Amino acid sequence: MNDPSHDPIHDRTHLPIRSAYDSVAPYLTRDGSVIRELMHPDVHGNARQSLAEATVAPGARTLLHRHQRTEEIYHFTAGHGVMTLGSSVFEVAAGDTVCIAPGSAHRLENTGDADLRLLCACSPAYSHDDTELL
Image (tube, rainbow, N blue to C red; front, top):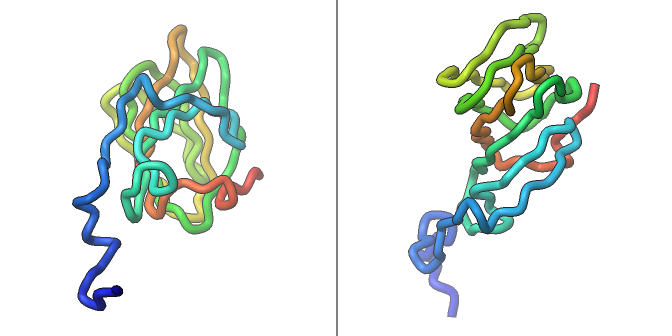
């Protein structure tokens, strides 16, 4: 029986909304970064956002792209590189955080000798369909 007062978006107490790093397989995104989806509605049952770890290898860079619907927050956890965001180009390093507004062209280049690693928070959740290569 449907309970009209039951809101499945807010009542997620029955779901194990947890992931273990080693159990999440990495994959290659359309922009060329290696992503590990740490939390995503399609897999984990959360509602409106996703969290992933991205890795860009030394000397590599992602393709210039944008997301029309998604706001992203990048928090850099290791390495250093150069970020293009719209018409701005600036250095990024572990400890930096950058907000990417929907529709903003962006890319990362790893200028270091070790992996550039970052956490990517997306709202709404990341979708390949919302990634437009430029």
